[in-house]
Image 1 (cartoon, chains in turn orange, green):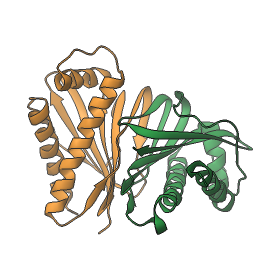
Image 2 (cartoon, helix red, strand yellow):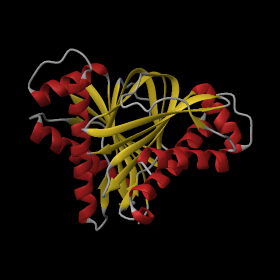
Image 3 (cartoon, each protein chain N blue to C red):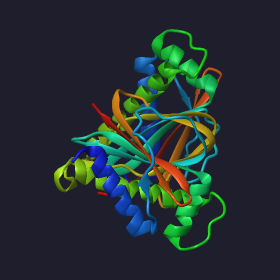
Image 4 (cartoon, chains in turn yellow, brown):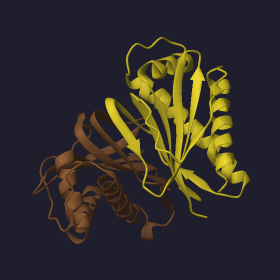
Length: 157
Length: 151
């Protein structure tokens, strides 16, 4: 799991799997960006901590329109503002993607535990890890919308 | 002793020994948060027998003062030093909460600390969680400590 190329792949397959199974959506991923602070424009970020064999944070960063579109596909209803349904939906997706990463780690005998998701909503905010953390961020496209899945992590054992 | 009292004790100790600041509770505990403006939040997840999130929400001015005291150097902008200091505070508080919740902190793992910095943002739990927000004050101003635990 120290191989960053594999981690980007795991993020891609983990996310695509959640979207195709739960939202019936085929996601297109773009090239992963590694170890660069990526200034994404997010209006809603859901993040979930990982502990144990990998110490990290998985975050899904969405511009407002993407968050609403994803929630619409997930819940089968139109959403026109970043309300509790949207926070819960993106939080649940973050939980499921993190769950897929946990399973991928388990296959490599790395035991990862998940915390609970939290959501940050706003017009102007940014999320950072600690200086020595590795960063992998993958942009995804869903029709006209773009959003990012980011993993900040250190490998502990 | 109630969980909130233990958290208050832990926070006071961390601030007094590591940050060289005396802090005190300055209001009633809350269970929902107000929107945060010009603030930085240090966040850390707890996973294992207890699942949750611990956050410390600090206005920019107070965060710079805390960082200056913590690092022993003058800080006058929100930079990586401030982000790291706030993340480290969340880490230390998380470590104490771990020990409060489970004997010797066994069976609970901490995630990587992260920070959120922004002009205006809302920090919300997603799942059903019990939440306690404790307001504190120090010489430089007020901040809050926010613990969410899965029911």
